[in-house]
Image 1: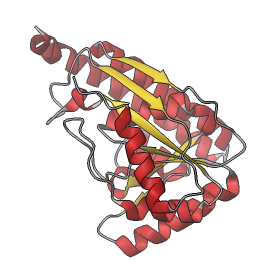
Image 2 (image 1 turned 135 degrees about the vertical axis):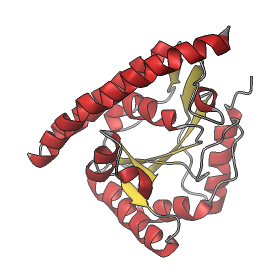
Image 3 (image 1 turned 60 degrees about the horizontal axis):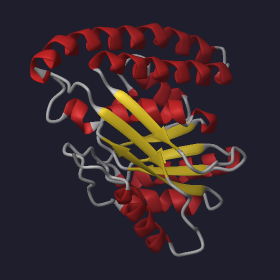
Length: 244
């Protein structure tokens, strides 16, 4: 029955998803051209709220837990596992008080309505993994940017999405660079569960009735060495991973 529903509901979702992207794209463009970046941030927030609502067409539910209150007057580096492109909208919406910016791959910076313009113009950093020297330099500047402007960053150290929910080993270079160049940033692990069930091995049909959850952990102590910190982050994220 789920399989049949997935074939029926997936086209409906994609139509709604596409309409959301097309609707918010010119609003972002106008805000950027007028240099109204606070308005742009609000538009992006409601864009991602709307995407979350369209996921409801698939019977998707999202649970968000943040047992610790985080400061808004300090840079934050959110370090998360990565299961799907649908990790992004809940992170942006539920962490909107911290205006998270993303470490993303270069290819996403063009060709996608609403999403590409936000990545290019909204303060995120786009890196090309085929150019590691250039990527490190961009991450250095990104770290300095969030440090100076008290912004928050989201980084997925696995480097690629997990298709089965199991966390891949961290590629530490990017995370270490960010930690080095944002020395006052609070480091906060985040665990994401079950977004992989939406896509699996393909984007059609999408999974239905997925129970997505996000858990924001206690900040990691920065008094230890960076290698120890990264180990603590991995341990924290894995502690809330759900396999079902």
